[in-house]
Length: 90
Image (cartoon, rainbow, N blue to C red; front, side):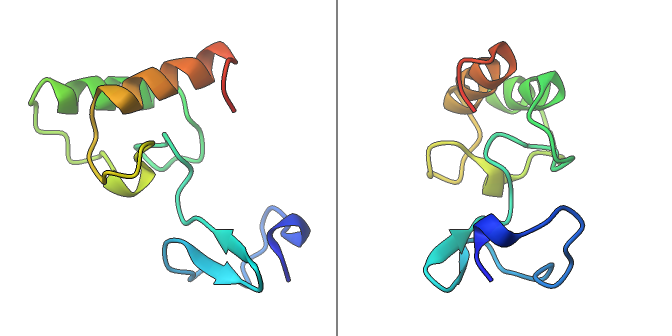
C-alpha cells in the first residue's frame, strides 16, 4: 500500500509512528499546522500558535505538527496557518 492508495477511514495503518514509511513513501502522523490535531488547519490552530508564542501555557499544541521541523511552536507556524486559511498554501 502507498499513500496515494489510502482511503479516508482506512484503519489498517492507524498505528504508524511519525514519519513511518510504507514502501518508498513517508506517511506523516500529523498534518502540518494542525496544532490541535482535529484534522483541519484553521483559525483555532492560529490561536494556539499565538498563545504559545506569547508564553501562555497551551497544552493543546502538538509539536509534531510544526511547520519548519524544529519541533517548536512559534511565529513560523502562525504565518503558515494564516497562509493555509487564506488559500495561499496547501
